Length: 122
Image 1 (cartoon, rainbow, N blue to C red):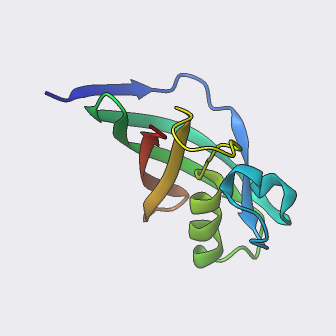
Image 2: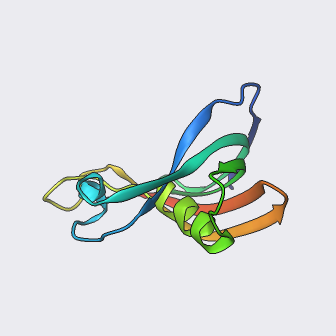
């Protein structure tokens, strides 16, 4: 049986929206690559479905405040890059969470939905 959690956000805190320009490092070390800031985003809502003990899917609705001139494809790529996360462990089965955005959908205006999966490295 899956657990469903949905949490509307009361505060609209701006988070940096960044696009990864180079891919010289694996995800855990992505901070060492070159990035370009395209503006910011606010998390409007998130929805989590737990599949089993070590994996779950999520859907985040965000409002993007991109800089003038940022195209739709650039924003989509930046959302994928921003929501990706990995660990820096040199061994397998460390138990850390890995995140990946697999689908980004533009709803209307500045609103986007980011679909993703998370799993524990076990």
